[in-house]
Length: 243
Length: 182
Image (cartoon, rainbow over all chains, first blue to last red; front, side, top):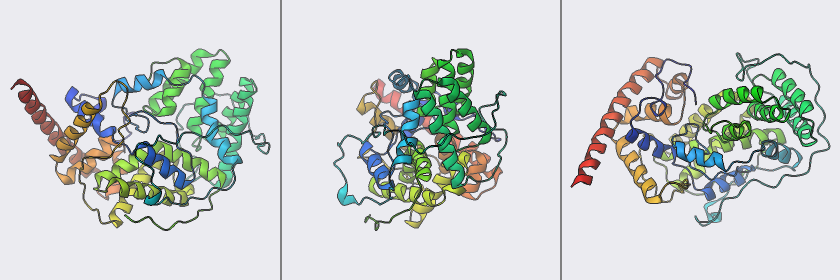
């Protein structure tokens, strides 16, 4: 994570912490619920827990550089199946209700975690979104918010954009995917799926051979999402050093 | 903690997409925040679940850039309703540390105990700001809103917390070195 836009100093772990201080702070960041607990919570909420297996996956402040590099080293080099699996899977799925799991259903602590569900078939009902085409260079982060809240209708439209881009990507049309993603990013400068869209954009640019553009975008993305699973995957796709 | 009664939540598919993204990004942070409030692992799990259920109800009101702050604030309110009003650092006996391959389990456990030890030496009214800023990555306005204190207080508490943290870390490190030499 970058230095926040406020008047506080840079975070210790990112600045002048001693080795021992980093060790202590890193240990604090490694505290996480068990994999089984994460799976239970996700199940109760009707969502799918991401395949997370490292100490830093859920942390926005990566403390253990070695662990991060090790994770990045085994990351896949393709983004879109990972980005789209949850989006499409949930769009085509039937109603899932958030029921809570009681302790009596608790699995033994050593049970392996649930992982991402298989990629379901594409939804035939996802319509190609329409919107103004804009090719002007953009900043990764929006400079201002265009609205205070996101409506459900907006989210449906956003999902349609992302699905459309993924469909284009899977069909080998990176250019069409790129156009779709840029329409999305222009229409929703603070959209809920902006990180996923930019991640896909990086991959599309790489596939189009526009590597310098892709790497520049990836560097800004990684700087803004340092420590996130998506940032590591973007770095991997763009051939950057792991964040 | 007894399991709450099951309840259904008629979220739309797009809501679930966002909920899933938020859950995967922040549930460990929320769980950590609750554990630091003194909740047991089981209670923290229930409270984390409750936090995300509350978030699911208000997805449209949560600004994308404030998701983590919203979740932590909600989690702390949930903890408060459970009667946990003070920060209390606890050692985790059942925590899955999800160790990276280059770390030994006992080393990591020892590091976490050191972490608990050092942080326990920071004043209770300061450690919360320290944790929210240094570990959870919130901004000072977010912390000020969360704790209902002025921005200036956030900065001053952080400064004092850092001094105490660094002093405690240095003492512990020195102590460890002496033990190693003896």
